[in-house]
Length: 191
Image (cartoon, rainbow, N blue to C red; front, top):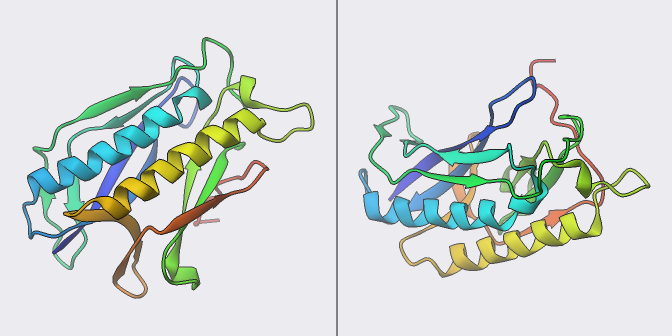
């Protein structure tokens, strides 16, 4: 069994780009696990296509076909199938880059190391309600895409998407999620 880091590069025409969402996955086979990891990367493509209505047309999420094992001596594999998921919310403007939707990833462990977070943004200004929170439509997009990801990951027989805890050196399968009806800010851990 191998545990992988799968970086999804986020490209948009604002200061601070490109961003990145780093996902973790496990495969049932050892390194290299091409077909298994390609299948898991496809689950992430489905997720980003499911939330593409959050982002203007000038936004895109990219898997460059490169993944790295999580171990003492990481191994890089770069022959996976790359993909791109473009935004579809039109040519409108962006909300400030600090205003992002945060998804909390849940696993079978309720501990802090059993949870993860993904920040989704910067999002299109069409997804802002008058009270300064994400629109109901945006939250439905995220919830539907996350429900599909949890279901697909749980049903994937050759691995799973999940949360890796560097503290415990342990990977846990994704079992659920939560999304708050407010924007979140990803602060630097160096501050």
